[in-house]
Image (cartoon, rainbow, N blue to C red; front, side, top):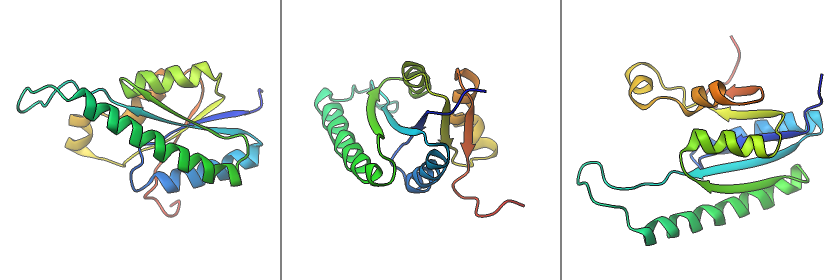
Length: 150
């Protein structure tokens, strides 16, 4: 069995990102693995309601903001998990997450689920579910809202 040396952690900077990163730090340190955070900015071509294209300037400003946030997060992460990195990409999230993990020859992906159910899951789909389906390596799916195991 191959050692887990590189762990990719897709994040979206939502309210549960901190819990996901904390768990990844715990698991990564237990395995002496490096963490690689990744955030994919989905390219927005227009407003579905109005059919208006998204301003290229707005897209660039948004990406700059995400890069700044990632830089701050990686600086904090480095204190607990030396050798960690952060990456901001753009495109279709599932495709880009899987491509990034492959480029690093990741041994594991730790991804969070929102825990959506029913109609919400059917309508919106699940990035986590699709990453599991397409990833070249094992994927650990974490529910950040779960406090204990039943």
